[in-house]
Length: 463
Image (cartoon, rainbow, N blue to C red; front, side):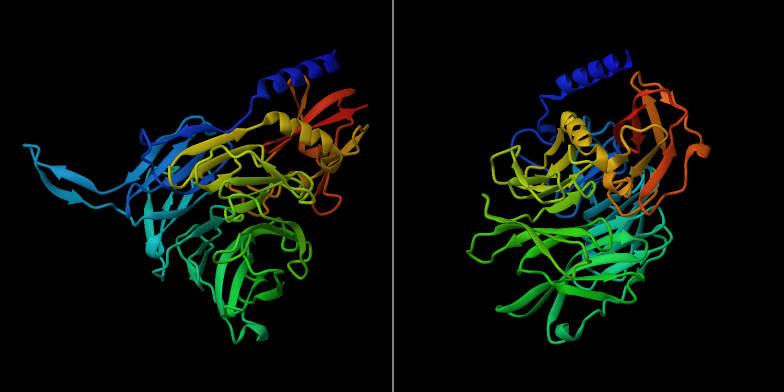
C-alpha cells in the first residue's frame, strides 16, 4: 500500500510540474520603462532581495517572503521632493545612503549591502532599517560575501579587499602583496574574489604588461590574506568568474576574445587548486558575448553558467554542458541568478536594463536528477541498518546565501505518507570520513522513505 501511495504522489507531483518555465514575477513600472537591477540574493527558500536603482544615486530594495511569487518594496532610499501647503515645490530631501551595488542576504534578518564610494550598510531586521559604516576607500563595493552573521568580506576591485570578524562592526583591510617573481614586472588587477572558508579566499587576477603579453592567474590564501599562493596561468586570456566548492575543486566561466572578435563561451575546471586546468566548454554561441554573468554549482554534479542571452546547464560535473532556452529575445542580460533552494532547478533572476525579476522552477527535473544520482547521495540504497549521506554531493556545504562550508541544520526522515519518523541524536553516528554522515535506520519498518537535508529531499528504500 505504501508503494502505491508513493507512485501516486510522484505522478501527481510530476503532472503538476510539467509546464515549468520562466515567468516574469515583478516589474516596477508599466510599459517599457525599467528599474535597473544591480544585485540579488536569497537568505533561504522564501526570503530574497533585489537591489534596484531608480536613478544615479538612489536605491530601492525589492523583497519577496514567499519564494519569489510576490514582491514588494521593503526599503526605498531616493531623493524626495518637499512641497508647501499650497502644493509648491520648495526643497528636495536627499537620499540617506549612497547608491547600492552589491548585497549578501545572510540570514532572514541579517542583510549586508555594498554601496559606491566604500560605504557599507547593514540591516538586522530583514532589510527594513539600516546602519551605515564607511570603509577606508572610495572604490565601489562590488561584492559582499558572508559565511555567517560574523565573518565576511567586502571587495572593491583593484587591490581593495576588506574582512570583518564581528558582523561588520569593524573592518580590516587585507594586504594584497601576493606578487610572485613572474608578476613583478606586470600590473595586476583583481577581477573576482570568492570566499570559501573563514580564512580561505580565492581570487582571479588579471596580469598585463602590454596588449600582447597578458594573462590570468588564480591566487588563494588560507590565512585570511596574510599570505597568497599563486596557481598556474589560466589557459587563455579571458574575463573569468570563479565558483569553488573547496579550495581545490572549482570552475571558471567567462569569455575569450577582444575588440571586434567574436567572444567564446568558455568554462574551465580544476581539481588541484588551479595548478592545472581542464577545458569543459569552448564554443561560440549567439549572442557572441561570452559567459560574463557567472557560474554556480549546487554540488559537484549540478551546475549552471550564464551570460547575455544564454544559459548552460550540467548534471555531471561539467563533462557535458547543454544550452537552455532563454526567457526573452531582446538584447538584455541577467544581472544575477540565485538559487533559493540550493539547486539549479529553482532560479530567481533579475534583469538589468528593463528591471524585471524572473523565476524558473522545474521540480520534475529535481526528482529525476536525484533519482538518477541517488547512489552519489545516499548509500547503500536499498539498505537494512544504516545509510551514509554524502553531504558534499548534495551541496550541504552551502549555507543560506550560496556561501562556503557550513553545517546542515537538520536531517529529517519521512515515510511516503509524509509522516515524520523520529530521529534521535543517538541515531546520528560520527562521520565515517570528511563529508559523509552515517545514520541508523534499523528501527524503521521496511518501506520507502524520504530524507530531508536542509532544502534537499532524497529517496531511499529500507528492507
